[in-house]
Length: 316
Ligand SMILES: [Fe+2]
Image (tube, rainbow, N blue to C red):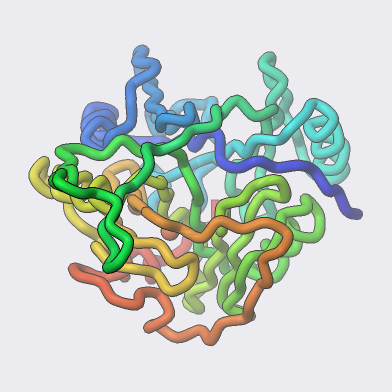
């Protein structure tokens, strides 16, 4: 069974939270714009319109939780697709062996093999373009007689990727890659797989990581910002507002981006990224050695959520 659909990237991620006000404060400080704020429910968007929705953890509309943080974690990711034909193909495929709900807006919703909520809708995210970055490189000055910008607060452009820990890695990867048609961008064979939508150009929209300790759960959600100044300015603002760094700032050798992760009261972490690899079918996937130094070329501060990686699993 194989379906190749044209997935375009992350459209929406929904969290179940116990403290709605704290979650709203986090995403506001992170730089997302409020688009909805109703009783027990709020939604915040990046500049391209991709959004984070927060609901009370016991909201019956939420997909069941996966992992130990049963009342505070990401419950569903909705990926965009290019057309209704893609939705129809995915619905037919997924309905073969699992319940698929179709909402009034045409989106479809189910769970993946490990239990994570998964949806698809026709793409609504807009194309965005950050202002040109003027940098002074020796022999190539672009910013003459002007000081570089300082950014007081980030305003992320898009949601680039979501990361799950999984204890069923190969089966999990095969579901997305072989069955749904996501493309493999890079791999830690047997330990982790970087996957992107078949019509997306982010280095990865989904990273599946087996920490080797029988762990399954949400790990983090990543957002792309427009400049290195925005990454530092956004991170400094989060720190000023009292949010704790998980790890960063630093730079990933795989995907090439500068990063800064913050612990998220909604569950897991939220990551600012800048200058991530952009790929198309000319990209050559590479198998990487699974060593800790591959996570960061360099970084400051904290650790990669050790408690999150090692917590006891309760299968949802
Ligand atoms: Fe990430």
